[in-house]
Amino acid sequence: MKTADVAIIGGGLIGASVAFELAGQKLRVTVFDCRQPGREASWAAAGMLSPAPDSPRDLRLVPLSRESLRLYPEFVAAIEEASGQTVGYAREGTLELFSAPCAEADRDKRVAECRPSGLAVETITLDVARHWEKAIGPAARAAAWFPEEGTVEPRALMSAVLAAAQNRGVEFRSDCTVEGLTREHGRCTGVVADGEEISAAQVIVAAGCFSSTIATGSELLSRYAPTRPVRGQMMALKPDGASLRRVLRSERGYLVPRRDGRIVAGSTSEEAGFERRVTPEGMRKIFDAALELFPALAGAEVLETWAGLRPGTPDDLPILGPTDIEGLVIATGHYRNGILLAPVTAKLVGEWIAQGRTTIDATPFSPLRFAHQKPLARTAD
Ligand SMILES: Cc1cc2nc3c(=O)[nH]c(=O)nc-3n(C[C@H](O)[C@H](O)[C@H](O)COP(=O)(O)OP(=O)(O)OC[C@H]3O[C@@H](n4cnc5c(N)ncnc54)[C@H](O)[C@@H]3O)c2cc1C
Image (cartoon, rainbow, N blue to C red; front, side, top):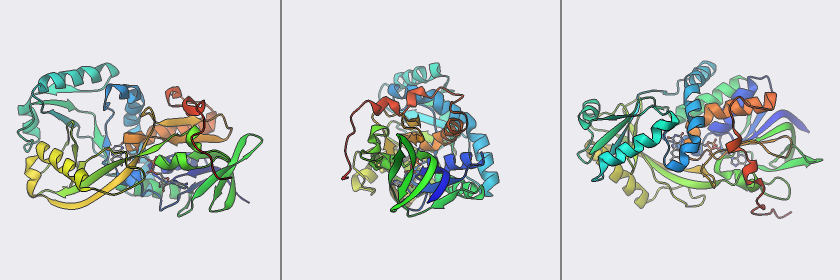
């Protein structure tokens, strides 16, 4: 039987970043991916590195997000050095624009919501915002500035993390589906992948929105990782003349600049099952938001459209940590923030595996918060 110290299910940004970290601890790591690694949500993302909450409910995630943003420069440096590739990391900040009749009140409420959790955010005048980004549209009536936010190019980052992990000796098994986990005397002892058993001292589930569909034996992993797909549609535009340096964001959508002048526009948030495709309605929503933020894009060339499946969870928080099955660790459910949260996730999993405890309190994200619930489904056996 083949053996590894660590078997990781899923070669997206989370699985590959964890693999890179663990290979740095001299562990023998094998990553299984049922497709080519890095072609799911991590490939589809916009690449904003924003710890700002989408809603008051998301304030619980801010400390973890801020820590990951703090780790980003050293994460990028390590990946770029180990891979010899660049990842398009930039720290130009984000302008959030408000257009409702009560825009200034909305902006002030948003700033007041963000500041207590330590986020850097300032109110700025529209004159200043338009001085920085000349093409901001007339619909904007108020602006807030998040100076510390950054961006990265997810496909470049994904490619670099895969190369960096490989250069550290990680084995990637592509087109290899993990069908289930093996268990002995209550502990997890490995995986079954394409019918073959591979034994591993630690198994890490990092299969994004698909995590809940993997069998642990007689039940599905949904007991620990009740993930679901939340579709997001995207498009890439080539502006004719206009340019953008900072991320522009509103309630309706966002625009993210790329190094080569392209602008990525997003997104939708849809409960559409595992259907990874774009729709006319989704595209209309993105066009409307993009043109409101930046009307000069009206004549832009549409270079590409795509959709990806975010790994959503019942409480919108990631699922991170050991389970009550020895040898089974979960690192999934990063929903809208998996690109931002990759460095801190790799660090936490590295600490759990090496020391059995973490330097940051990760209890709010424990997979055990769902474990008292009954399994949602059973496998045929
Ligand atoms: C449109 C869109 C925009 C986004 N924008 C941002 C953003 O700006 N900033 C941000 O921080 N986050 C963003 N996200 C979220 C981010 O992309 C995800 O949270 C992150 O990519 C999740 O990474 P992952 O590795 O967990 O999952 P994935 O990238 O989905 O990887 C999971 C992997 O597991 C593999 N797999 C599944 N089942 C099995 C199995 N049984 N056996 C073996 N392999 C399996 C899959 O093939 C896949 O490669 C966005 C997401 C979308 C869709």
